[in-house]
Length: 365
Image (tube, rainbow, N blue to C red; front, top):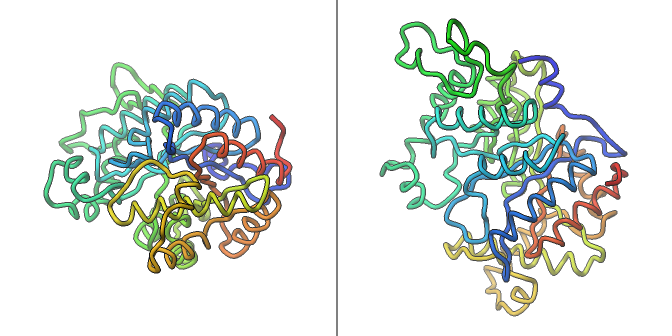
């Protein structure tokens, strides 16, 4: 991997932000809106955050969730690539066990051809959905098989991306097109480089694997906060320098919502908690608005969950959010913060990123 690609992973610090700030988009579909509305918000958000100096914009794969319209990250990223010019685009992530490695290599090779030098390939080993939906995606009754085979799947995908299966391998004559076709192939080299691979995780498995392979690591702090520091410590302890990175590089996904007044932030985070309660109890739906959350009669167990969940959402006014993010960065030593803002309305999400950009003195749009 070229040195300039390693620099692109590391990003740049702009304004007064101590580390690069990035975006994780779940393409939230709120009550009273549609997937079309959510996807239009994603385009507006990508253009806004590009103009404001955010470093990268990732889309996460989820399935069978009415309130999350990001089941096809590659399709969404192609659309975003057509509406942006500079911001890095990627998956946060594609769930590798759900797909054949060759298919992912072809999809992200195509994205790299559409937006050269701007594509990240973030990979996870979870299904991104419930067990029944995972079985429908994978066409197998053995759901653990994909996760257990993750290192082997990753190795196969990397071979396809680099087009370097050894002589005698059954896939030696198969090429992921578009891609860096090598040797005597009629097309010659089609691409100067391929998308850098990131490993995503919410526990120690991917942290250790990313460290051993010398890959950048993205940790899902936004839904596994109790594991953040142990996983990052494990990643740094096991890291081995690679052609991609000379030293570890870790970003963390952070749920953050800035509003013009603190009360509105509390109302929105209450709705976030209700949404997560429904997901965790097998009742996914459209993202609720604060009024619905106010009408909902939380059981004692739900109240306990809501209090715990909102503790890990950095929310409030712009200054309060900046303070919370700065404290989180110091505690974790994260090299980059990837912010995900959940709200039932697109304009609230856009406003949140505007306020955060202003708080850090990022370039004006």
